[in-house]
Image (tube, rainbow, N blue to C red; front, side, top):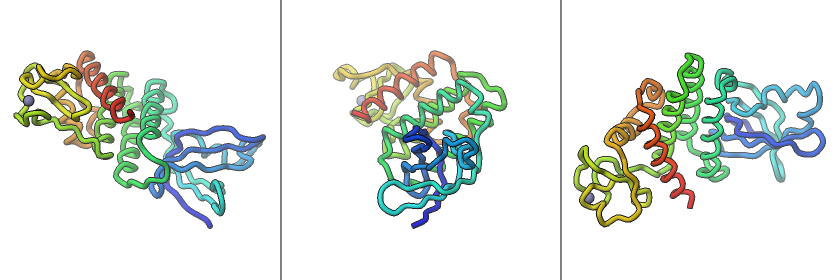
Length: 240
Ligand SMILES: [Zn+2]
């Protein structure tokens, strides 16, 4: 059987003498692993199109076992991202989170489209020479959006305990409860992280706006730090 997929290459590993196995996140089937025969031979035609961080159409033949790539048409190779070390670090961090959160062969068109918009916008942001902080804010915002699309939506308006509306003051964040704890309830809570008013505002912006607009946000380094602490704690909780 022959299959056609739209996908983004996450990673590649060498196998055998001249072959490679690719991990590809696809629109049609989530993460798939496919083999490319002879792709490490000199002059192998397919090799140039099969680099990580490439958005492409691939043609796969599959009978029993792992599918084999027989053709590929690149749609976008995100050349700016590939030349920028900060963008590269952020992308591989994102791919790693996809690998942790998405089970193989699980299709999700919304998440796929989020990823494509993220890559296109990050490529443009990198081209326009945006600094490290901007690129990182953009990535962090995308990850909050991604978690929400995967069903890990945070409660950012009311206290997760008493359901009182959250107002600017000494608020805390709790990953297990998936949101903010008000000052009153926080006295009884052991596991909590301080969350700044500015951080709360930003997460609300991430959840209610389009990914392509995140690059315009201005964020102070201490707020970015607070955002990263919260994101990492939440990711850690989800993965355990
Ligand atoms: Zn409360």
